[in-house]
Image (cartoon, rainbow, N blue to C red):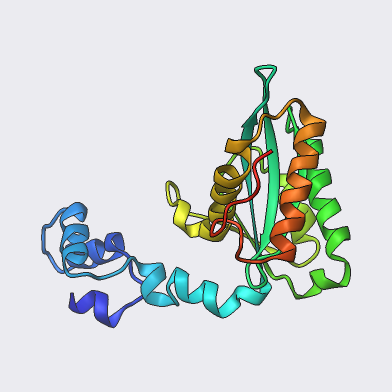
Length: 212
């Protein structure tokens, strides 16, 4: 505990190594258990702000993105890609496709930056999960614009909670209440959802959207 307190940049493996150098034989897992039971955060959290603190402090400069799927009446499943601005909660539904290829995903990134226009200059971070559909070329579009990619931890959907919350609301209030015929129909439905949400921030998920 003393080593962890005096060296916030040390993880449990580094502490284990230092103890071994002092002649103390203890398993790395035991070091981890001791720190965890004592409520000592992993080294990145001790060396800097917690994730929630970072999000609050940098909200004006953060956008987040994620895929979600929709089942059509013909039995096929399509992918939708959306982005949300953390501070304003403004949503951008980037596109709908049955085959999210690298070229398609990369083009959606370019389209978003063009849509943001001068507004993109204040964006510094993009939060996304580790989905393989987010290819290197997708990241490169944002990195070339000076936007840093932040991948959320494995199995930690709360790290991208604002985006996940909007997707959940969209499902409950619209997609679960609507029979979607085809991709074109889905695009129209999502466009209405986007307009409604951006025009009336905070309403979706709190009051029922009209069923179609």
